[in-house]
Length: 311
Image (cartoon, rainbow, N blue to C red; front, side):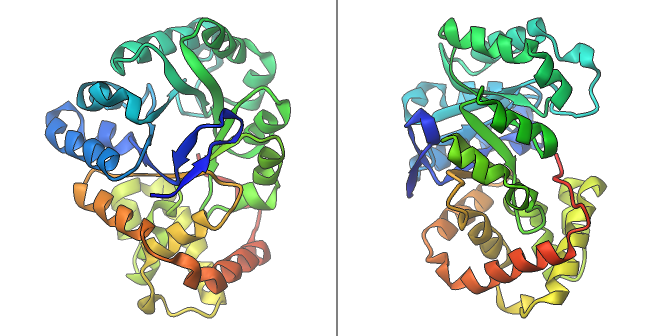
C-alpha cells in the first residue's frame, strides 16, 4: 500500500482509507464479527487510516472493540456533530462538541484521537466560533491531536480559507468535482491541509450507468444520491467511452486518486469481499485511465449547471 504525507500533520497515511459509516449503519453490533474481519483485514493489508463519526450508530464502539488493541497501527479520525446541514443551531454548541469528543474517546477505547472533524457544520456556525473553540480546547487538553472540517460547498471553502483547521474532508468523484472547479482542493493544498476525499466512487454511479440502471445506487445509497447517477449518465453520453470495456469501480478510484492534492480516499464497505477488491485495485497501475479522467474533467465543466457537492 502506498502512503502519502497527510499535509501539515506530517503523518504518513495510506492512500486508501476505510470509511466506517456502513459498518455502523448496516452492520452494527449485531454483525460484529463481519465488521471485525473488515477492520482487521484492512489493517493487515496496509490500510492505516480509519474514518468514523459519532453519528454512525455503533461504528465507534465497533472500532474500539475490534481493533482497539491495535491502536498504534492506525491513524484514527472521527467526527463530532450531527452530519446534517439541516440540523438546528442548538445541536451545534461548545458543550455538545466537547461532550461528543469525550464520548468518542470512551467508545473508541483510546486516550487520544488523532483527528476530530466538525461533521457538516454550516458556515454561519463556523463563523460564530463556538464549535471551533471546542475542538481547539480539546487539542490543548491533549484529547485530540488535530482538528479538521468534513463537509462541502461554501462551508468547506470557508474552513479552508480560515486557516483554523489541520485537515479537510470533502466529496470528490467523477460525479462531484466542485471541490476542483471551485478551487477548494487547490486552496487546501496551498495551506498544507491534509486532504481526504469522501465518496470517491460517487456512490457507484458509474456502475449504475454500465448496468443501464440506477438500482445499484438507489439500493445502497438512497434516492438522495440518484443525482450522481443522472450526472454521470449525462457526462458519459458526451465522451469517447465504452462502459462495457472498463471496470467502473476501478475507473472511479483512478479518477479520485489522480488528484495530487488528495492524500487519502476513503471507501466504506459492509462486505469483506468489497474491501479485498478495493485492496486489489490499489495494486494496479491506474495510469491507463488518464485519457478518460481528462475527458470526465472537461465534460463536467461543460455540463455543470451549478452542480453542488452532495453532503
